[in-house]
Image (tube, rainbow, N blue to C red; front, side, top):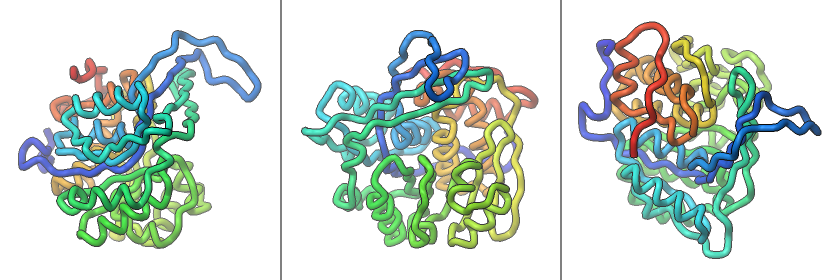
Length: 324
């Protein structure tokens, strides 16, 4: 492994609180993604554990962190299965609350084409009921965390409450601004690390060039911005400058959950005290493994897998999914 890298298992495991969504992904693999109004025949339907928040919680746990998940699920089979899957990963689910009269999260996903890109639609669900009160209930966990992570598949009020509470307790707040939406300036000023992809960065700033968008986001108050660039890697932007980190060449199988993998590993690296460059390099490597196998949560790599990949050169080979 390159000198300077320190993994979570080499020290006391960092504590990560992930606040966000949990979905069951219903996935169809297509020879190509359909155009509007077009029907495309696909393979069989797959049912997989997903949701950006739950994905990031699993990725962080496999990265070696002690993870607490804050979210909401319905009183149905989907919700019970989602909670059981997180618990099986060693994730604290005491703040993953049940909403008796609301359905659990469901996402419909189409994966297709040579690049295995995806289209995703998410149903209204218990995820949409998460609010400030739920965040305040988890204050003890947030106060004890090394890093707090959130995304945008939950109401913005919950995200803002999480950012404010993290600031009160002096905890870095990592925000993955997906699905893309405009964000209030007051929230961006509370963000330690923002992890948009190119389109999200453009929506937030009106600038199509990732470098310009990253600079604009720093000017809006984010301490660090990391723009993910798909197969090209990532752009790290800080007050001291910007640099590209290239991704290893891989043959993608499924890009669902790639951004979640990246954000989670970045958060664990931050909590573990990695330098910004080492942190992004490690997150890029983890994501390159993730996209070589199917399933958002099933494809999340372990510390050992990422360590092996960082110690090799050239193309990362597909590694069998982590056994649960």
